[in-house]
Length: 421
Picture 1 (spheres, rainbow, N blue to C red):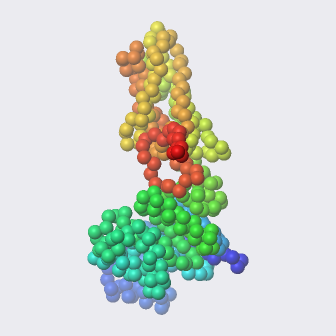
Picture 2: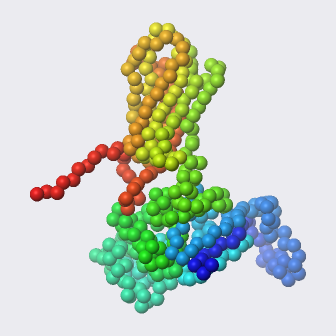
Picture 3: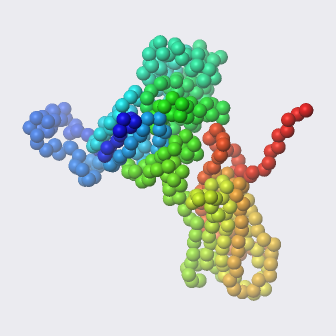
């Protein structure tokens, strides 16, 4: 079809781990001659299927990748570290060649794979704009035409004639991105560039990329771990997992598929008999469960999701004043809260407990829960540590800021603004 600008067909990339070559120039030349001229089998050449040869293991970084991108579309690519995202971008950018398959495309391609490429610490900001711009494919006349716009976009006008070795890391990256952002390719490939600068600069970066696809009709391929940014910028997405396409479709669907497989760390533990249940002579825990009350059609826990913690335990004592406390911790061990009930009189037998965490309370992050059982508000009977763990994902609506949100909690308290008279 005439509106397709990139078409990937059966793209696979193989890497060979370990020593390459025989260690002898003479032997390497002999092997090359036998392989290329005499068509004899080369023992150092890979064999499809991951077989080890001479203690060298091969690995498929990508395997059978197929997709199409039309002109003016923005495609997001998500996945774990090591999933093959950067390898795919390098193939699309023609930095490396695929082992198998072919990329068909048309138009000028520019890649923002490593912001700051071409910058030299001893050169001034002005000089680095010309050097980096030239490396990225801009002509001198094009750089001169856009020079003032680049400097204004970067916000480092006062330091433009200062060597960049004296720039802060934020200034350095802002200037580098400003140069790359003012390229005018048909296809723009972007790899993790939203982690730069402050809120205002991130807003400008997002606006620039959004304008590239919606207003200028350029095709954008965007790789990021910032799923909220991918969702807002890209109507479609691909999830790469271990070098293969795990899911494709609308960004919301693909991101939900991706997160739903990651989030269920330990939402439920259940034991069937006293012998195997965690506890001691006083308390035996039979079950503990985290039950999210998902918002809308989502199947992931985000900052809006109310959470219910349910647990069941066996009390071995009669006429005991008993309380249970819920301790919520961040993954690094900081306690977010410690809540419990007032001590109540219980007889021997099963007891059910429940605690609710409202939506719009926790910030995004990873958490774990411990439950403490106490007699008469003073004597610890049993402490069930790290019995549940879960992740809370970010959710932002009508907002251009995608940096970290400060704090362990993220309550939705009202802030009221009024026009002064």
